[in-house]
Structures are given as structure tokens and as C-alpha cells.
Image (cartoon, rainbow, N blue to C red):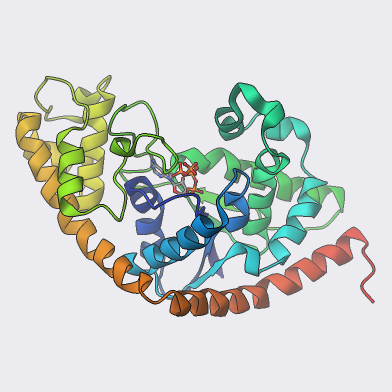
Length: 333
Ligand code: AQP
């Protein structure tokens, strides 16, 4: 059976990058015959310090964002990672399988730890090993992610292969990253060469899923562009990262190909294109943000949904962890 797993960190508010690169595609995976498991990865979030109250709020807000975007907690399993302790348990086993050198090569580690790696948490270094546990704990076969997470899914494959090899078993399936659509890498509105990110200190660099219509329009109006008109063909976007980013966002929001968008808007100036993009963004995002606000008024209900999701997740995870312990040689009496 096809089983999809993916997660998002409650390390800040949801961005348009998370929505287009991840959540919107998670929703598209909810079909008959596919089991979809989506996780608010709070254990990952604390690899960088989080204020406890803010973490709780962000966890609920992200859950509301999933539901408001169309994740149905009946069809999909939706939960927060720390409520299913098997994630941390399998993560430990994988810490003993993965190699230091593998982690050191991860670009996200290098970006986030920067020059001050000695002061980064050990958790941040081991992040990909816990992520491998998240995926393999469900024997998931597909992992929809944005471009920036591809390397981590590849490392998950390496961990599964090494575990199977070291213990002479064929236990963990080798999952595939699924990176598709026009917005696998949404860039900062202030710098088209940098990823749009929840933790970017500049709020103008991103569109938050909770931004109101005026804020969205203002951020798009102020987005960095170049003075040229829009091209009518994709190759005209080469070396124009800011222009390319806005066209990609438009295409993803409109569910059109970049070619189709350029056929329509080629030759227009940004002064004309930006209001079109702002209108489209408001049209698509406002209903989601309004629904998020409505859901956030009942935090107890959100917690109940997460608790129920965790129960369902554990039904799959517990036997897989138990079998892993057996393979490794742990006594369970
Ligand atoms: N800019 C982006 N474009 C496309 N996809 C993106 N994703 C994140 N940013 C973009 C995808 O969203 C999912 C969840 O990401 P995450 O929360 O696990 O962490 P991240 O990739 O580190 O995202 P952020 O927003 O940049 O968070 P911070 O600032 O905390 O590091 C993933 O599938 C990711 O690819």
C-alpha cells in the first residue's frame, strides 16, 4: 500500500513557502488507496530554542493551517510528533546507525549552524536522523517535500539501507522524495536567491498564512523585481531570480504551468503583474487564514484532534518499533 509521510516544524508561523511547497501538495495526496500521515514535528522545532508558550501556540496554529488548507483529520492521520514517543525511540537507534560524516555534509546543518557550530545543539546536528525515524517508523514510501528537504530524504534512504545491511534484514523500505510543481522552492520576496523562511528576521521577506489582504498586497507591491517586462517564455527568466519567483508563485497559486502563465502575462510590466498576483494570492489565501482564525478559537478541539491522530499513528508505529528492537537485540520482557 502507498503510504505518504511528511512533517512541518512549528518553529514559527506558516509561510507561503510551506503552503505551496508542502501543505497544498499534502492535500492533493489525500486519495483513496493512499494512506497519508502528516506530522507537526515539535521535537524538530526545539533543535533551535523555542519559547514554550510560543511553541504551544505555533503547534496549534500549524495544525489549524493543515486543516484550513484541506487536510481532513479523518482521512489523514494528523498529530504532533512528541505525542508518539516511538519517534524519539527510533531516532536514537538511527543515531547509532548514521555516521557523523553524513550529518556534517548536510547543507541545512551548515546553513543553520553557520560558523558557530560548536554552539549549535546536538539535536540540530542529529536532526536528519530523527527525520529518518519519522518517515521509516511508518514504513512510508513517499515523502512530499520542498526542494530544500531533498538531501534529508536521501539521507533517510542511506540510513534505511545501512540498517538493513548491518542487521542482514529487508525491513525498512527505501522511501522516495516527491518534489513536484511550480513552487518547490519559493524564494524570499526581498532576495530571489534566498529561500522564503519562517525564521527569516525580515517579515517583508515572506507571506505568512495569517497575513491579512492589505498586508499581502503591500508585501507583493514591495517585492524586489528588476526593471524589465515579463518574458513570454521560460528561458527569459534565466538570471532573473526575483522575477522567476513571482511567476512561480503565480503559477502555483493558479494551478497553471509556468509556460501557461507566461503566455498570458508575457510583455506586461511588474506594475501591472504585481496587482494581479496580489489579487490571486488574496483570493486563494484569505479563506484559509479566516478558517485558521476560526479553528484557533477552540484550542481544546485542536488538541483533541492531535491526540486522536497520535493514537492512530501509534497503532502503526508501535509494532514497527517493537520489531526494530527485536532486530537490534533488545530484550523486551
Ligand atoms: N521556501 C520554500 N519553498 C518551498 N517549500 C518550502 N518548505 C519550506 N520552505 C519552503 C517546505 O515546507 C516543509 C516544512 O518545512 P520545515 O518546517 O520542516 O522546515 P524548513 O524547510 O526549514 O522551513 P522553514 O520555513 O525555512 O523553517 P525554518 O525557518 O524554521 O527553518 C518542507 O517540506 C519544506 O521543504
